[in-house]
Length: 444
Image (cartoon, rainbow, N blue to C red; front, side, top):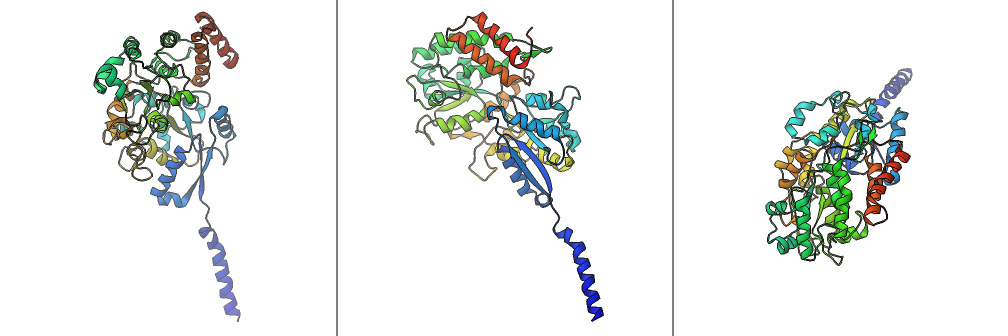
């Protein structure tokens, strides 16, 4: 009996020491984002990497940018540190510089510290330079953030209206009708008006091109600066309104969406935007789901009057994370893997969640050149033929961390001027004062 009892104790002791091996907890990777895009990507990454999935779990925190909620929450989490601090976090173009180059830039880990061969992969993937510029810390000269989506802009126009006005819907011809430069654009606006069409829906449609195409950003040497191209928006906006070249809508309103499906009295020729505007905004507001329904299939894209980009999400790692190797592999898969098993190939071809998904432009030119970008929404046009070079024309050197706030103030003052409520000089003076009041930034 004593012998059997001794064996039982030995087994009990062995079992007690073995328990942690069977009940070993996964390490937690904290992911912060303002949409579910990157979280869904990492779900796919885990499915493709079962060993990582067995050892780690991703705890996702999503805070929408509505009412400016995301940034304060993220800032607090970064500054708080500890086990709940973000390991990976995302930032959109409107405020990304704050996290790569500005006030919160000290938390961003250089990609090379994550085990990523930055120089070799950048070259192999053919990443658009503007995304690299935005994601590079100017002090350390190190890359700390990259996107996965290319957001270089094009002019998205109605084929039927092009044929009626210009005799063709060929993108190679239409780009010469609307540009280069704003003078040609307004010549096209006059021709379209003669046919009863507006060239755009509202002045916001040209603003993103003007903002993105300007040489200087809002802040120069620590002071508010109004680039001549951005100041010209006052005059271009007024010209659109005074001549009836648009429907005087504001972007992201019902009236703006209505112009995408001919629900207004005056048909609108086009919109300025990247591929995401086509896929996630215009397609759903076209009044149909296949050619012949609403305006679906009656669109094409061509080179815009000026090069620009609009939007995008950058992926950043916390330099204080203790999981740099594994999160580095995740970030590399999202931003720099140009193989057919990388995120961007699936994103470009609409196969991330199986065949038949939404095709999108990606930051890798190499991937887009190897992918099929034809869309029925664009009448069978391969959008990559336009959007790959569009990324080359865009610049990230005119961005600041205050763009979201300053843009809202500026556009509000421009609307006051074009409505006749203020003089040009008063609109500019009030703009400068509001920037001073809200951001404590003096003007030159």
